[in-house]
Length: 231
Ligand SMILES: [Zn+2]
Image 1 (cartoon, rainbow, N blue to C red):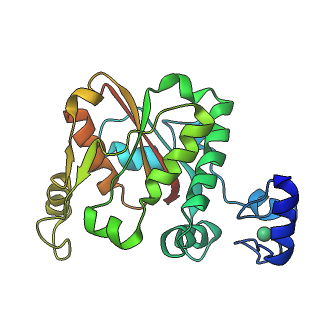
Image 2 (cartoon, rainbow, N blue to C red):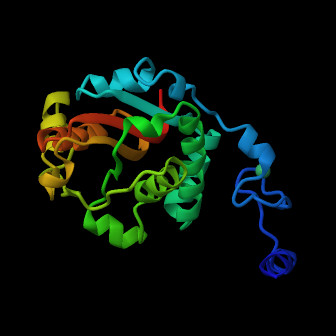
C-alpha cells in the first residue's frame, strides 16, 4: 500500500534528479538518478587510507591514522553542485544519502572494524540556527547507518574565531582556528578510535584543528572522513 501511495505521489509531484534534472523513475533513486550516481567523481581513498593527497594534507597539521574523501571537488564540478544543494537548498537527506554511499565503499574494506564511533565536525550555534541542520551530522548519519557505527553529535563544541582570518600568516591562522573547538565530554572520547566527519576539506586546517581537540582530550586513534576534498 505504501508503495502504491509513493507511486501515486511521484505521478502527481514528479521528482527530478539533482544532477541532470531528468525525472527520477527507478525505485531506490532518491535525489540522484542511477546514471548521475555512476558518474560521480569518486576517489579510491578507501583502498589507500593513509597514502593519498587528502591524508598528506591533514597529516601536515595533525597525527592521524587515515584520511579519506568520497568525492573529488573541482570548480563547477559535480561534487560542488551537490555540496551547494546540501548547504543552500535544505537537503539534509541528500547529505545522508551521499554519506551512505561512501559508507558502502568503506564497508567493502571492512572499515567499520577499525572504529568505535563517528564524530561530525560541529557548526557554531549561529550558523546552525541559520541553516537548521549540520550537514556533516547528516553525512555521518548516512555513514553510520551503513557501517553500523554510532554517531556522537555534540561531543565537540565550535566557537567563533576570536578575530577574522584575513591578513594573517599561515601560523597565525592555524593558532586562530586551533582554539575554536572544545571537547565537551572528554571522558566519552578517551581511549576511543574515532573518525571525524566533514563535508568538504579544502586547506584541511579547520578539520585538523577539530581532530587535534579530540586527540588532546584522549582519543586513541583519529581518522578523518569527508564527503569531498579539493585537490
Ligand atoms: Zn541524473
